[in-house]
Amino acid sequence: MDKLKKIALITRARNDNFFLERWMRYYGPQIGFEHIYIYLDGKDQLPPHDASGKVHIELCDRLSGSLRVMEHQRLKFLSEKAAEHFAAGYDIVIGCDADEFIVVDPQLHLTLREYLSALKIKTSVSSLGFDVGQHKELEATFDYDKGFLAQRHYALLAPDYTKPCIINKPVQWGVGFHRIRGHNFHIDPNLYLFHFGAFDFEFLKQRCMNNDLIQQGWEKHLEMRTRTISLISQQEPVKGEAMLKRARFIQKWFRPPYKWNRPSMLNKWVAVEIPPRFWEIV
Image (tube, rainbow, N blue to C red; front, side, top):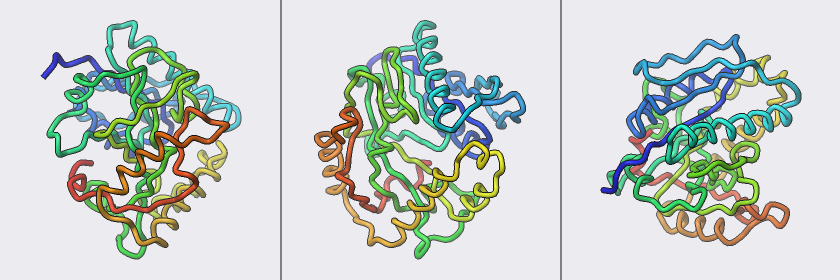
């Protein structure tokens, strides 16, 4: 094993403690709790519970404006923070949202830090994106005492979540970490990003009644997440590794002409069964 690199993990979130606490518990053993940096949007925020006592949690002045304006501000802020972490001695910075979990293929038996330390990164590396959702015909309401993938076995192969979250030099991320200005993306064969924004229908219903989210203009996002559940529930999910390899190929070579540095699945929403080896990971 090569010398382990120093990796920082950053996010900026508001009203997301449910995800943040699970996010810390997952990433802490992967890269070290002391290398996790959470910036809370608003000094009215209650910090998430940090059982390790080592995570860096900072309350920031709240962003303002429309959802689109705030998202541009958020990613500009996080891009600047990433540059600061590089200047402070970090070799790699991972930027992602609190409901996103980057996983090394369990078959390799490596932590995220071990895997990335041996990886040659060309500015950024992307993980194949899974938009995980509840299959309402096959899966019950979420049990909060259990893990995500122990209960949610289905997802859409979603190019929107094949994000260039992992970088080895300062960059300017686009909104949602979906792309990097002026740079291509590179999909790794052993990295996967699991997005859990649509993990449970009842959870989404509660979010739809959150006035703070509604005032920020989150209705469209909540509708998209409900659509994930509907698309998964209405399809016969594809099993096996062949579809994952095919998705990597399609996303590598096909792009929207107006977004050359974002992957595409040719406008096909493909539901898959998540391979069982991942079910106990997150």
